[in-house]
Length: 206
Image 1: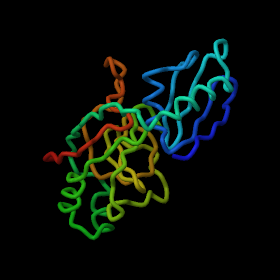
Image 2 (image 1 turned 135 degrees about the horizontal axis):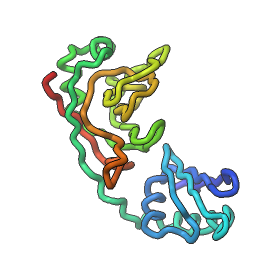
Image 3 (image 1 turned 90 degrees about the vertical axis):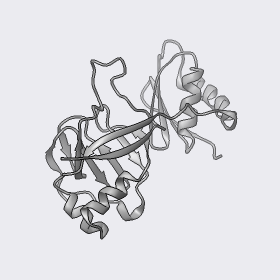
Image 4 (image 1 turned 180 degrees about the horizontal axis):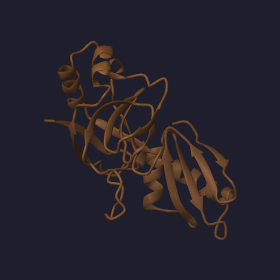
């Protein structure tokens, strides 16, 4: 396992870049170093937010390096399984099916046969980047993003799939819609998925 790299981000954050970001994150959640306030995962990195009155980037880096050396013995947190009911009637479904060389029904069947994994969260609260699309089902992004994508839209963009938690601009191909609420502040857990969770799509009648 290659060594991580560290980069201070202002006076209260430290970016750790490593292919083992998820395992490192799990370790830090279980045994948070003194002064650590939060940890935000992304693709191949974790940003550590700390209280500068209790620690600094150099001390935190030392603790993280020590924790990193034992990651091979770490157990990742159990992945949750989520099934999203989807009505496949998005405006880009015909285009995506043609791009994949499939009928619309065959594309829907292929998408529902996959098990996606939450790689990381970002873009907007509750948006999960879902990995697991084979190359044949990966779709190029729109040349010009839509000014507003409806909340609940199920979309494909490059190697990713995703669900728009709220109406936002977006450049991914819209293939369906789900009532799944990916962000709701009224719930004890506003964002119902985290990195490592597994996700399946289930076709619903329109």
